Amino acid sequence: MIVDQAPVVSRPLREDSDFWRMRGLLVDTAPLIPIGLNWDVRRLDGKRFHKAIVDQNWPSTWPIQLWETSDGRLAGFVLPEGSSDAHLNVHPDYRHLEREMIDWAMAHLAQATPDGLRLEIYAYEYDALRQRLLAERGFEKAGAWGMIRYMRLGQRPLAQPVVADGYTIRTTQPSDLADCQRIADLLNAAFGRTFHNAEEYHNFCRLAPSFYPDLDLVAVAPDETFAAYVGVPYDAINRRGIFEPVCTHPDHQRKGLAGALMQEALLRLRAMGAVDATVDTGDMVPANRFYDSMGFTEMYKGYAWQRRPIGAASLASQP
View 1 (cartoon, rainbow, N blue to C red):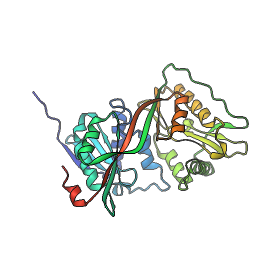
View 2 (view 1 turned 180 degrees about the vertical axis):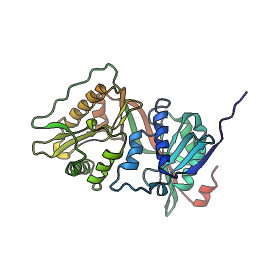
View 3 (view 1 turned 60 degrees about the vertical axis):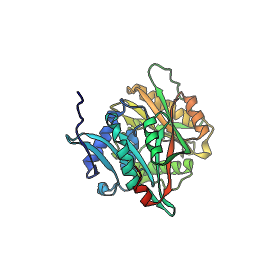
């Protein structure tokens, strides 16, 4: 005898409580799925709180679609992170909804270009289902790829940090806007950006549930500037540390500073009862070699799948 699941309907994000339901889905599904299938909580916290101004009317400005059962359980949701991209987060019992979720993203999140509409959706190499659904809809695997790296803490030996002469390690002071500005300046210098500011970091630290002050570490140079930074948001329910970001100022590279900060963070994670840790990287070979040297194991590789620009009429007619 086949027992049908409760009917599922979709609707737009409406109110702040929807965010917490989305976050709850990520926490609840983390033990049930391969790492990377859904976002980690830090990523959702960052989209909500890592902003210079935390808009109280945000539900009306986020193009997010929820899928929920008739008895009120959240089955999945789709949201963008940038322009012309879509990210699927789904309970493993409801992966049959992904066809509908991709179709919604194609209709609502694709970016208009002079040649038509463009959309990008990420899929890991292990995920045959999502790759097949994307291929059926005209998506092709692109060159951009990323990597999930993983460390189970367990009983593995952890190195004590060795800090370069003249440098010190301390936790950040996010209540001090001057400290926040030094973090922003470091992020801009390390990643070649200009948009980071003190307020976005300050808001994330005071509002994001995944922020843990004891896991937010900087290496301070002899002149008191910030030379390296490692933040480790924490999923307390799943006891998982999430290394993001890991960076060193260009003027202070090749001194082992980021490695020392990561080693200190791993010791702190173990002391607080963490089970494991992850770090999500792009296709930067030097960075991945560094994480290998720290003891993180390559888990899953994934690619952006891109829908080539096509006319809106053709897009609407796809199966």
